[in-house]
Image (cartoon, rainbow, N blue to C red; front, side, top):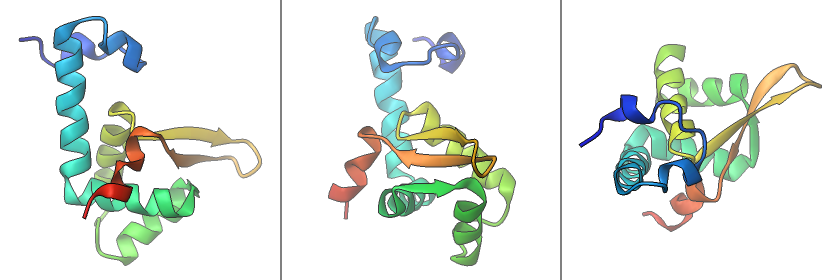
Length: 112
């Protein structure tokens, strides 16, 4: 079975769906993303706010004692982006990364 390094350059769901292994890998990645309590909380916050700047989201997570530092934040956000649950957009007006929920990430509306 291929590992994540076989798929590191894939950028869209369509690329993953070209093979059975890619589809299985993406499905596993997605399940690990939405079933993790920290990432699920991130998805809930982003879903509620619709668009949230990185600094605001990080502060919310630290104040709520969900995360302790920016390293944990970056790891979990990279995971959610890689699983197509969240997308990051560079907002030129505020010169910061802004996060938005994707259709795949909206699954949190139906969990718990």
